[in-house]
Image 1: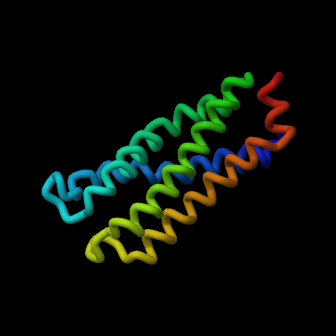
Image 2: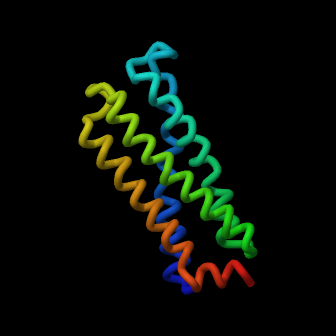
Length: 135
């Protein structure tokens, strides 16, 4: 695996660290007295979880080898992309109130980060990356 690919995967995965900020949105869910639809609780909880796991995934990516580590990285990125898709669906089914964010902002933000996660996943399937972890 080249350093360019290594850094690309790192930056693509690292960009999703922003999902940890959703911990601040949890009190805004209706069931907690806020104005955000209850449908956002699941996507936001999974965002927080995936965001806090990210440093561990990057540590594994940089320091460990083995097909199991590669598999964990693939699963992490696949679940992350799926979580973003759930955010897009949640915005469609239970839109966030306009005072929190415009629909275009929500769709664009979630969509961009989902694409970044999918690109990282795609890069993990490159032959040189798989070979690196198989050693």
